[in-house]
Image (cartoon, rainbow, N blue to C red):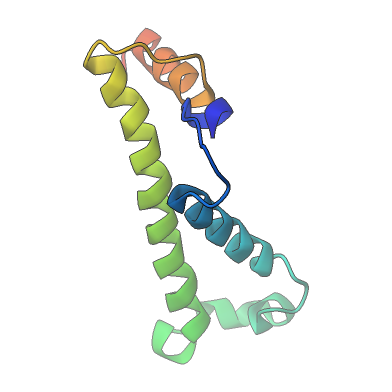
Length: 104
């Protein structure tokens, strides 16, 4: 967490760590060969969501994880905008690159 988001964690039992672990476990479950029939039969990816329940699960989890990790990144950005010191971290370097490129 410190390397990516300049955020120290006092314990592996912290809520944020549980959320990170849940996200990583879900991503790991996607990499199990044969976990989804669409891997074996690629034409299944064209089925509508009501016939392909895995699409809904993956889409929901994707949004949940994007919100979670996006909020962690916003915390870094907001600390910098408030004038608080932000230690060097991956997100800060991305923000700095975007500023140099003239992006928000």
